[in-house]
Length: 271
Image (tube, rainbow, N blue to C red; front, side, top):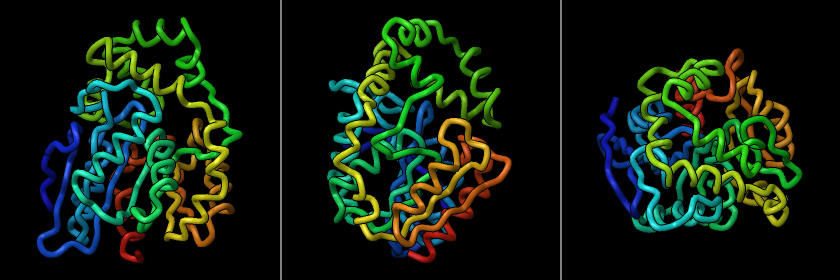
């Protein structure tokens, strides 16, 4: 498989794997919370081996990307994605998103339909009537969010993720970078507190209207974004297909990296 390199563009660190010859297209991958581009470690070289240029940025304040001058809001992340795409002149891309990467990437995709060649959507939602629960609700609550984020230790972080995922120690260490300083921690609260699902009402029907090949790749036992949401997207996006990885939870690309990469790359062969 092709080697993956770390680079920077538009103020963001990113991983890239390139094919040996001319690329069939570009795959752009967006991680979720509290991850980084490391979650795509199996996908990038597999996609490159199949002839695709494959890139995955660390979103602002995550992984090796600095927070920069902006805040941590949803809108700022959408803008950062747009700047990244523009600076690298990526053209029409196959966009793969997971968790918060879905809320960010799908909003950008609807705003920039000419930039989208295909979609792979995993363990996320894009519904104006969505509701936060669990940790998301806590982080959105003034006082509670500050207490949880401020008290988080690397050991506690590892224990929290280890209880719900098969993440490797290497993955957890990379994802812990999002807690590296007070600004990064505060930005996480800004992200969740800007995450009002009502903002998605103007986007109703617009994913389906993109008219691009769409893969829904889901963990069958996801407690945070249940597979029922995938079935709802299946109905809303004409011609989409659903692949469920049974026995896997929310972090499907960490828990079953080779299987998830295989499914995604097989989908790209049809694009």
